[in-house]
Length: 596
Picture 1 (cartoon, one colour):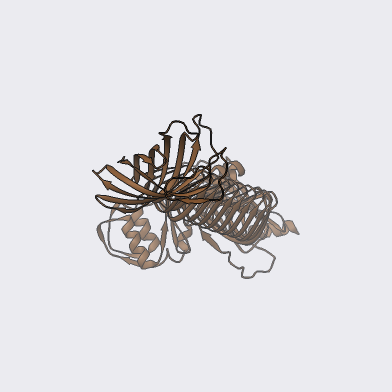
Picture 2 (cartoon, rainbow, N blue to C red):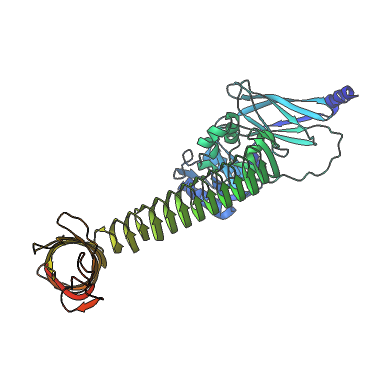
């Protein structure tokens, strides 16, 4: 009975329609009738702009192959859009339509398809054949053969041979053939089936807009390590096209419910026992080890080790080790070790070791070791270092170093801060460096437009000191070393550190206020326990642009000297301290200041 059916099918019912045609030719926008005026001299980009405005289409192409600033000369035209593009660009380009996108591909070569249909049993059909180069008649290897309605796909071997199993037969199958630099070809196969015939819902498809300019996740380090050569070839052949499916389950990227075409499928729900590679996710994806999406991820993506997305992420991305996104992120990205993004991030990045964003960050970055981004608007918090090219209105907080190549809001670091312009506070345990920073606080502040000066001064306790002031136009730090002019005393040397502020700065007069703490040292530089603090007001008169003379009254507090008998409670003295008791007292300092 089966043999009889096969013979009758071969004789009467099997009808093959083999036609080499472009996908886009049957599409709605490419078939639209248009009218275009003649252009004596214009560019390809200008023509595309006119078509975009008149026909509501977007053009996608590789800018390295098609130069939009090329000058062309066109005649007036009336006809369909496909033929007009073919006329102005030439026969070496082909066109496909996906949604609003017209995809322009460089396809100078053509292929032929020679096929037959086999029916090993009643419920199975195998389409097999050869793909050859029309010009040379040589076989074409690694060409993609696929039926996008049934999510079936395969590659030709080195002899150009292929076999495509059709598990669910229908009245009509469109077998599509794609290969880089070759014009796409379709084979329409009509054959008999005994199953009921009904209107099958057309499978939705889409196009990844940035594909023509993108090197692609599958061509990156991730693709080379975790995908087979056949999978990467399939992705290159099919370009930015993808199909939609409600779910998929895979053990590894090579074992999936979608078979060989899985890399071009966008799923609503995806489970990867070890790891999976799909076109994208619009829902939830769970991976025991890793998840790889060629294009976009929207929703929730969780993996035990890493997630890699070639397009954009909209939602939540969680990984035990790392997340790598080639484009932008809107949402939350969290990893035990590392987060990376090739575009802009709007949301939160949290990593155990580091966050690295090639684009901008608008939100929050938190990392155990480092944060790095091109532009930041928000907050960066890192255990070691924060780095940004530009961070206006941003607060950087780091255990060791903050660095901004341009403007930053505020910087707080355990050791050092560096920026070109700081609009807010710059606080460091040791050093601040900037072209402009009005409010730096650190032991050393090297501000290009700020304070840098040396002073030689003597105070009421007969200490002669060399003072170094460094900082911004408002706040600055003081470091000084002092030596007692009186010979026989235990506190032979004094080290002083403090913070000052410029209250007034005129051409001939300036007014400052400073607060400082003194550590007393013996002649052998042993630290004494009795410390001193001072609050002083410093009026200075400028003798020249660089030299000033000053006399500064001060209010001081000093602890009693060691090895003395206490004279009672804390006392107030108008001038100098009481060495036997804790003392509040008045003092003063006078000296000469040199602007560096």
